[in-house]
Length: 317
Ligand code: ADP
Ligand code: MG
Image 1: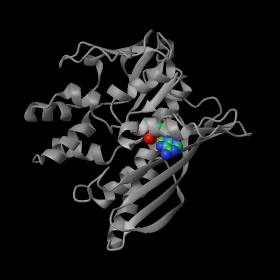
Image 2 (image 1 turned 180 degrees about the vertical axis):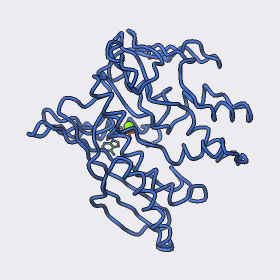
Image 3 (image 1 turned 120 degrees about the vertical axis):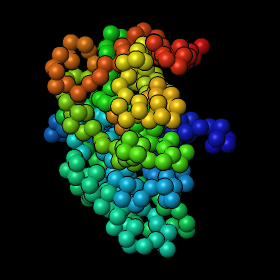
Image 4 (image 1 turned 90 degrees about the vertical axis):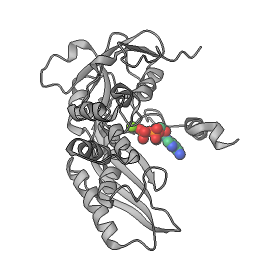
C-alpha cells in the first residue's frame, strides 16, 4: 500500500503489530516508552528525527537554533511523562561539504538546551549523507514507577490544563514563511519557534500533584488533545476564551491580521504541556497551570465561546 494512504499512524500501527511487549512495559503509543526497573524507578526512552527539507530549511534556521531545537523537543517528551531526563544520544548524517563552524554552532545550541535540565550527552553516531542533514536524538530519563503520566488516564470531571501561552511558535513560523519584517515582538515569536523550552520542572510538579493524563503540545491542542481523548475514552469541552496567549502574539495578530485562536489551537510546536487533573488537586497557587476546559463523557472536543466559529468537535460515527 502507498505510504501516503497508510498515513503516519497507520504505518506505526502496522509496525507495532509485529512485536509483543513484555508485561509491565509500555511501548509504542505515548510520549515515551516506560520500562519499570527493580529499584522502584521506571526508565523513560524517547527518540525523534529532524530532517532537512521536512522539519527545517537550512536557509531559515541557524545551526545554533537547530541544535537547541533537536535537544529541546526530545527532552520535552520526557517532561511530558513527568520524568527527569538523565542523558541524550545524538546521531546525525551530515553532507561532506559542511564546515566545522556549523557543527560547533549546532553543538553550542544543543548544549544550552540540554543544560537547562542538566541533561548530559552520553553518545551518538556520526556519518556522511549524500545531500541532506538528518538528525536523530534519543533521550533517556526516569521517574518513580507508577508516577509516569500517560495519555490514557483522563476521567470525566477532570480539568483540562496547559502550562503556558499557546500559538507563539505558530506565529513565529508565519513571520518566517511570510518574510514579515521583524520588530521585537516578531523576533520573540520566531525565537519561541526555534528555541522551545522543555517544561521539565513543571512536568514533574504536575505528575507529583497527581495529573491523570499528560502530553507535550507538538501538533497543537486541536489534534494533540484528541490523542488524550482517544487513549482515555472520553470527550472534552474547551473554553476557547480561556486558552492563554502571549501579549506579543496578540499584538502581532492585530498588526498582521492573524487569527490568534486558530494559531493557539491548530499551531504546533509550542512544547507546553497539556494535562488533565482532578479539580481537587490544583489548589496551590504555585501550581503551573491554566485551566482551559474539562473532561466530559464522549469521544471528541466541543469548542465553546469560539471567536472564529470553530466546528463543534469531530464525531467518529
Ligand atoms: P511524539 O510526537 O510524542 O514524539 P510520535 O507521534 O512521533 O510521538 O509517535 C507516536 C508513537 O509511535 C510513539 O510512541 C513513538 O515511539 C512510536 N513510533 C513512531 N515511529 C515509530 C517506528 N518507526 N517504530 C516504532 N515506533 C514508532
Ligand atoms: Mg510528545
